[in-house]
Image (cartoon, rainbow, N blue to C red; front, side):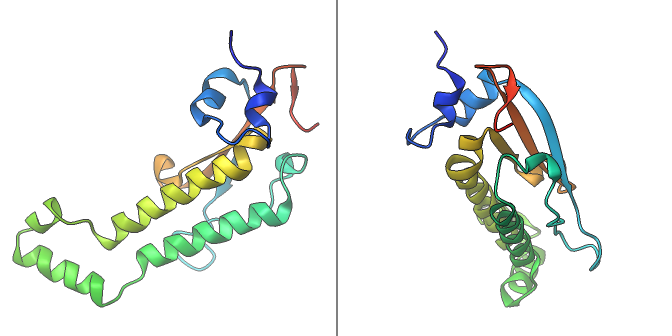
Length: 158
């Protein structure tokens, strides 16, 4: 028998599987947090709180997640001595250096993926939500999936 969905969302259960949540829960809706181009083409997302999440998550928690993502993407795109050195080494080695070395950008993308996983585990999945890494959507949107509470056929939290 499949485990009951609210048990997956329970704050008392330390380890719940995001895969279980994806496979066993019905998707009620998806919310898309769009890119914010007000300051140019740097990768950042709007911090405007989507009304669809009002019954699921605290506005401050949501904004903190998006601000942290924005800061991490800014860190990834920051140019510094290391970025220039990577570029020079790439040219000198005909880009073969990247076969044995991760770029600063790749390292920060891994950091972002880890942060999103932690946020899903601790905050979003217990509330019937799932953040999708923006890299999976071409850095165009932060996708938040809202799952339905299957015990009563309603969207959890309403």
